[in-house]
Length: 146
Image (cartoon, rainbow, N blue to C red):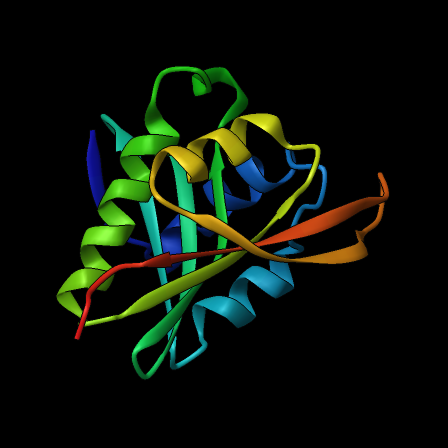
């Protein structure tokens, strides 16, 4: 597996993975996020095939994990853990102190992944998600203690 920064040529593969999500980002949203000056996007490759991706935003010493997604055909193999581990290492190298994220309350695999990696719930956003409706759990992890 190879973890690297996303390139413009990767957008079609990321759109394919996003289409499998209950809340997919549109191609225009992906391109907008790619062009965000504070944004960082990474892909995970198995050979030449992109099997996962993530998006982060850095704000001084805080970061937000905006998205982490694994291709359906590659789920259940620990790739979400690998992608998250690499993203957290990137943030640590940037001297980020805390990382926040929102996750669907009914997304049990993602909630387990984040809990396993030290994220703690710090809030709830009622009815945050649509199609299907769900609450967002707001999670936080301390990455580096300054």
